[in-house]
Amino acid sequence: MADRLQTVFRHLGSGRPQQAISTIPVSAAAYQYSQPGCILSDEQRRFYDKNGFLVIKNLVSGDKIDKYKERFQKVCTGEVKIPGVIIMRDVAIAKSEFVPGEHAVTKIQDWMLDPVLFEYCCDPEILKYVEAFTGPDIAAMHTMIINKPPDPGLKTSRHPMHQDLHYFPFRPADRIVCSWTAMEKVDRSNGCLVVLPGSHTGELKQHDYPEWEGGVNKMYHGVRDYSPDHPRVHLEMEKGDTVFFHPILIHGSGMNRTKGFRKAISCHYASTQCHYIDVEGTTQENISDETLEIARKKFGGNIKISFKDVWRLRARLVKGQPGEIAE
Ligand SMILES: CCCCCCCCCCCCCCCCC(=O)SCCNC(=O)CCNC(=O)[C@H](O)C(C)(C)COP(=O)(O)OP(=O)(O)OC[C@H]1O[C@@H](n2cnc3c(N)ncnc32)[C@H](O)[C@@H]1OP(=O)(O)O
Ligand SMILES: Nc1ncnc2c1ncn2[C@@H]1O[C@H](COP(=O)(O)OP(=O)(O)OP(=O)(O)O)[C@@H](O)[C@H]1O
Ligand SMILES: O=C(O)CCC(=O)C(=O)O
Ligand SMILES: [Fe+2]
Ligand SMILES: [Mg+2]
Image (cartoon, rainbow, N blue to C red):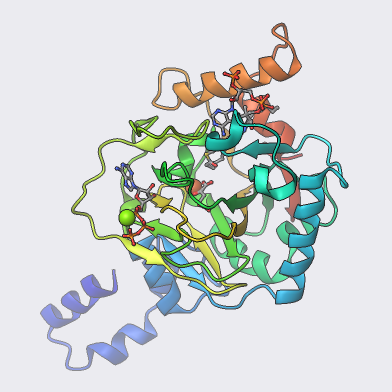
């Protein structure tokens, strides 16, 4: 947009295009993926528009992260019980004998009813950035702590390249954002996030299980047809650094070659003005079917529940006015 204007000015023969541009209120329309008047600088808005992600250094304090880590450990040992929480074991150890505590756990999700962990979702430091993408009415839609285990040698600790929107029956995509905070230093050795910058401007793609010999974690669908030539960026982050990214951004994470459990905490937020969609007949039908199969296993085969309901049940308002997706 700014480029176009500059060209227009040049064509008009204006001698001082720079000054002319600064007096024209282009900013409202100049950026597609963030809200006018938000906390982001023009440079940050431009970066997110172009790349589909934005890293904010040192956004969450070490003290808060230590508190979440301690809570996570208590959930893993069973000392703290959270209603509705899903505790997921790594596929490599899912069938092995008893492993105690956090060493058995690859992620916990749906801890929206835990007052301690949910503080992460309500953290004003995070929400002021979230608001830049969602606008002022915000719901927490999906909560996770990922505890990427040391790879057992089968590469099962990888997360295939995917778009989070594949899992979401609500739109518009541009009013959804993920906040992902490193709970310790993450780099290529322990499997940091890998992103394809700019992929957020594309379409939601078909996702399936990758054909990995060592096995793949339940519901870890991947994009089949992304270009292997697309530039990849490894997001190396320090404890407390937080990346905000668009739900169409293609991303994954590499294998953990260390002996430690690589930890991150994340929340997907959406504007409460978003609406639910029907995924029947779309590429999302496979994840919808798989989710409902798990729900039926959990609650009995006769339960009448839709993919939308599964999401409606987890959604929690964190700021502003309620709406269709979170009441
Ligand atoms: C109302 C709630 C309904 C539940 C719906 C679930 C919601 C899912 C929505 C996904 C949202 C994702 C958001 C976007 C972010 C992108 C991602 O994170 S993708 C990955 C998301 N993954 C998940 O959501 C998986 C959630 N996990 C689970 O549902 C469970 O942990 C489980 C994998 C179903 C296993 O739970 P459970 O049945 O309690 O476990 P067991 O009794 O020990 O095992 C049963 C069976 O499953 C095998 N198994 C266990 N763990 C794994 C694994 N990690 N991968 C593959 N298979 C696994 C285990 O071996 C048993 O198999 P068997 O043949 O029956 O012996
Ligand atoms: N054969 C594959 N098929 C599908 N996805 C893959 C494959 N190999 C790697 N990936 C995915 O690509 C991303 C990065 O993987 P990669 O193994 O290159 O990362 P890394 O080991 O952390 O980095 P590097 O080895 O380059 O230092 C991860 O999301 C991973 O799951
Ligand atoms: O922390 C990771 O490895 C990435 C997880 C992820 O992208 C997801 O669960 O959607
Ligand atoms: Fe993801
Ligand atoms: Mg590699």
